[in-house]
Length: 280
Image (cartoon, rainbow, N blue to C red; front, side, top):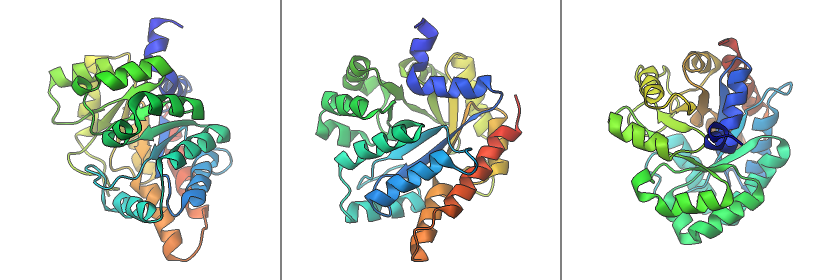
């Protein structure tokens, strides 16, 4: 494996494959444990399968946390319910296995104290054994990540850190140098959540990232809720990340007293068509 391939890791290769196919990758977020553990695993499989075989390229599996700093109200609702219903860290590894077996690449979004409590090297070991590609760590900065760098190197895992419109040029350079796989560009300031319009700051932060390091793919999250928005973001980003719009389908199904995943699949199909509409 050459130096560029090593930098892309497992998940970055997925993004590169989409780029080589003339489109952006689609990344879908769902938390493990909502509406319950089996239901969340079924929903993640639905993300991968989509409709007519067009699903997400990568599943971002969220681990519920009692103090989610960046999560919007929709995701907070789902993760709070998951915690109340007894989700545990071992369920996260079950979700990773389920996504990998379904044929997509699993990444884990997790707040750092949960990894630290589990044991950094032990967590990396168990994540790799389950088939996980790596971690997205919203509250861990590169300058505080020595333990994670060592563990991820030891177990061949990707490291995805976040940049934001408020990040200085120096911080962007440092963050991207610490990443393996891709970098997560938050397109708006504040917490997550589906929005009626995408952020005008998104193409700016993507360009700043590309100026800092054109070799590392850039994924954009926070706000995308439909295929038209996905196509817009796909015109300048390497990956389109969708969370709240997907979680809301599960909440609606539970509110209706059903486990119907067809609305979720329909939303995934719309998003998948969106990222393919904008040819590169």
